[in-house]
Length: 230
Image (tube, rainbow, N blue to C red; front, side, top):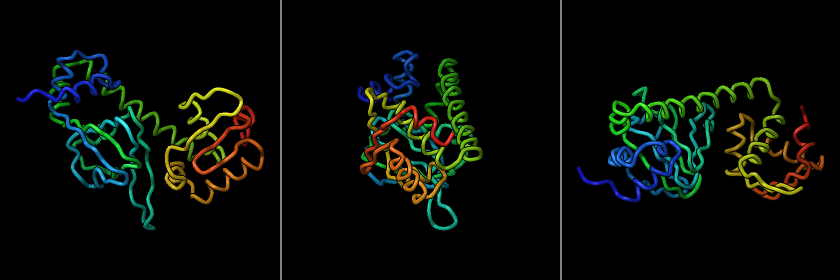
């Protein structure tokens, strides 16, 4: 078996999923990994394709979505750098229920199912980390169902902006955020229409809580935004 490319092994060793395992173990997994350089808008896999492994996003963004009956799409998740996707379907040994498309020029690693299964057989720590990652994903999906069922459209948008603030961890009175995707993609992720998303941003702007300039959003009053529509 050929030695894994040093770059792939180095990338894997710094990913949260692999940080606590030995270089030798990372090296074995790297044997079954390959780099994917994808341009914006590239389809990584289609709904119904076989799941032969899972993906790690090194940089860029990926949306997971499925087509809706009216010809549009429903965005299930937006995957950011440092995150992974495709593990659950890989373990189920079923085809992908969604398609994956890059939202920006991206670098990903694809880790084959055989490499993962072989390592799980010999490495309990790695198996636990895989289970933990799947549990976090499940917890997020449960939170999504709760948000769609119990929160108003405005509360969903505000919650999304507050989450972006936590991710950006900006300082100062005015907090500047950059939306990680187009408004139509984010609206679909929040299970609202693009028109509703734009209207809510406009209403929050009129209320003096935020300022909007394209994808740039400035939170003008964080405390009032948290309490708005609650």
